Amino acid sequence: MKKNAAFLKLIIIEKFTLGIIAALLSFGVISLINKDMEEFANELVAFFNLDMDNRYIEMLIDKIGMIENGMIIGVSIGMVSYAALNLSMAYGLHKRRRWAEWLTVIATSLLIPFEVYEIIQEQTIVRIGILILNAAIVYYLAKHKELFTRKKNV
Image (cartoon, rainbow, N blue to C red; front, top):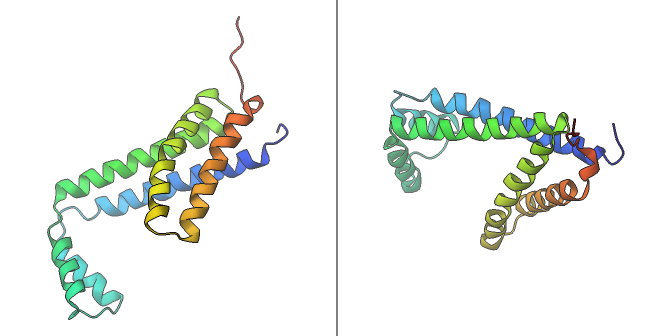
């Protein structure tokens, strides 16, 4: 492993973990197809021992009951795509591919404006930490190009 690669290992682990979590969640979401969503919401409320007479809980149950299969499929496809993106970045960074460096920089940079917006809405330690981590990832990958292989002319 080349010098300055410790943070790169952290990036690889983070992207791999995000990919696995998104893939598992997508399977969970797709399992909700053809399920009575209102009944499912009621089961969740009972499981978490929430007040079913609360008007906000009732409104939430009604909204969840309106979710149809098309929305479930769309969310699941989005999550599978996000998982594939993160797993691709993790694999490419692990193999020290230049395309993975660029893909990670671009994909991570695109999220920063949304993270800033979220922080403007409400400052929390988690949101600020995620913004700092993503900014550090972009800076690190842009600064340490020597960690990635370059194709040699034959």
